[in-house]
Image (cartoon, rainbow, N blue to C red; front, side, top):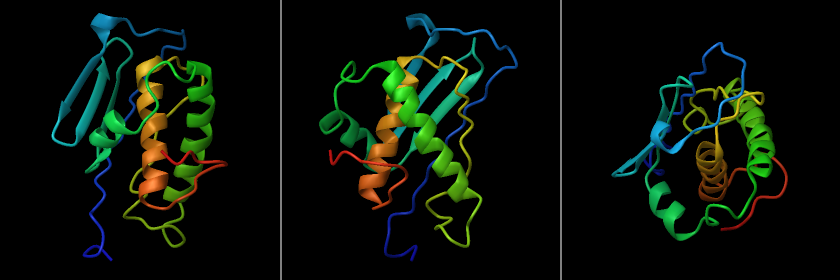
Length: 144
């Protein structure tokens, strides 16, 4: 099966501090770097890092995703919570779901304000993933 599909390399880490107060990302705090097919966002003050490595995602993001601002942050947060919950459930069932697709859990806590950019990228990766790999994590999936 590995020979018939591009090996999905998806590394997704959100490291959250124990601080329970809400923080909003400011422009100097965020770092977005795109190299090859890697998208990275980091915020040292909130102690998290998101790395998405998937061939084709950065091109899909620039050519097919809805533009930033199309959805509200609360919309993205609600969708991400549903998608991440289902994703994590599938990681825990490797006998039922392809472990090459669902390699590791995602630490996404609903009480944390990750900011618009992080939620935008997570949401769009989930849409890309579902359409590209013909998976349905939760509800209606836009065909973008």
